Image (tube, rainbow over all chains, first blue to last red; front, top):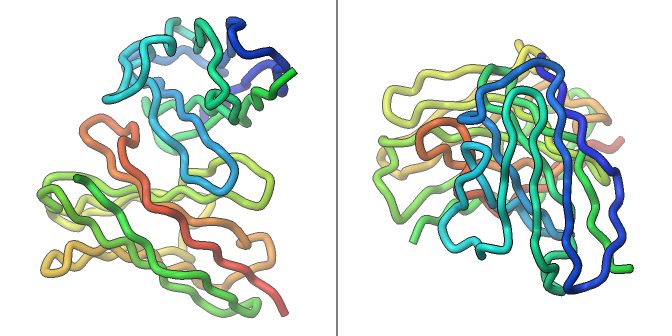
Length: 108
Length: 118
């Protein structure tokens, strides 16, 4: 099973700042098979990025993804109030598909 | 627009079974796979498996092998997840999610809370 480790566990920033979230895989995965989701309390996850760097439909361009091999990054260039949420990475290269444990982005 | 609408909250006793439904609309049901993901209270996301809505093929996570069954009903564009021999630790929100090609999830159901309590 591929283990995804996200860091930091919690990130405290202010609106307008830049957020950098990390996802590290226990073994190399093709960038084609890495996605990022945003989840707010009481809601289902929402797809942000797939294929490591492709924005899903309707996702603002302040969200970007990058990385390859075992290290992947989600960057939010300028935080808006609605961006404060929990973010998960997911690998779908091999079953069982797995998610990271999440990074909670909170308002400083 | 694509919608996945799940059945409502369930409360079950340990050892019982639960069957959660996920009704799809807004797209050709048989062209996509539907996956099940659960989230225990305050925890992260856990993949359970998936069903090919076209031919009914299934794949289950080993964690649930023998306790879980996915089925689909093409006439109503609905998939079902049945989990048996429920344990306290099965208390979670269960989501269905559509996989548009490779297995990322572009649409999710609203979630179904299953509580296992004596």
